[in-house]
Image (cartoon, rainbow, N blue to C red):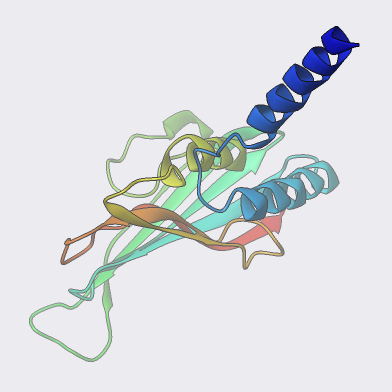
Length: 173
């Protein structure tokens, strides 16, 4: 009888330790829901889609990079950079623009990385959403439940400190 009580106690303690395991990422439940939305979208689109990554600086400079993915492979990337020219403070002007096809992917330095949303979700889980004592983490899912903003900003950083990705839209091809 004492042996069975001892075994039961050990089993109960082991279960408690496993169930109290802390996550290494922020927004884990939201991430899991978003990942399921991504998996559903990927299946319904036959893993063929395009998405736009945007960046904006406090200086007024901004970029838009569109990544095209067909059957799970990046097949195109286009970029537009806009800024204020000659001290204009009214409307940003296109200062750089280019397009890469499948044979020229990654031949330009500027723009968002030519990666799939699978790779973005992996980077979110292994880097952007990691718990850090010295940073604030962000996670938004305004693209039908899929990632729209994911990353972190180190504390005490003044300008353009966001490490992550901001996705304006995701659409089927």
